[in-house]
Amino acid sequence: MSNPAIRATPSGTPPARDTQPALRSALSREQAEGTAALLRVVSDPTRLQILSLIHHSEEGRARVADLTRALGLRQPTVSHHLKVMNEASVLSRDPVGREVWYAIVPDRLDAIADLLR
Image 1 (cartoon, one colour):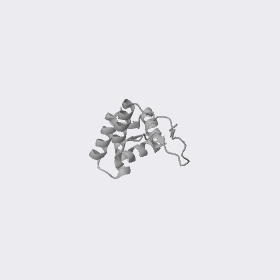
Image 2 (image 1 turned 60 degrees about the vertical axis):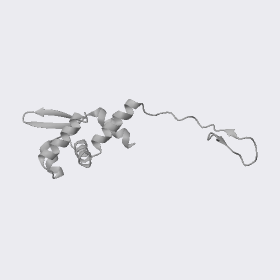
Image 3 (image 1 turned 60 degrees about the horizontal axis):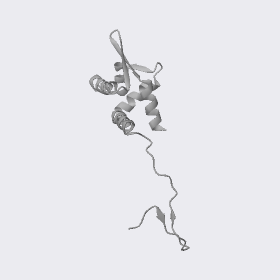
Image 4 (image 1 turned 180 degrees about the vertical axis):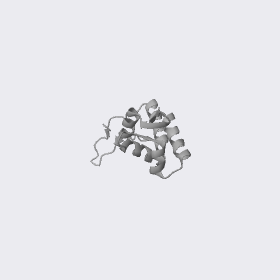
């Protein structure tokens, strides 16, 4: 059986060993699992829209009513998506009186941005 790291040369000279460096893992298993979990949460189109709306809002935060109106979706649907992202620590939840404001957790925003680079 031939060694894939050895190349034959057309000139008949002895084959040379491949000098390519061995592959190294860029992510640890723990990092890969965390990134995969983040991707599962943000891979939904509605959630991406919510993140975009919050990110581009004047204050960097939004209420359920604002998001419902902007997306043209029912309040329970938007609340469900917000809950999923809050439980995954993608969004923070800040109750102010009778309103609840949602903002993107800065570390998670950085992680999402890194994925897009």
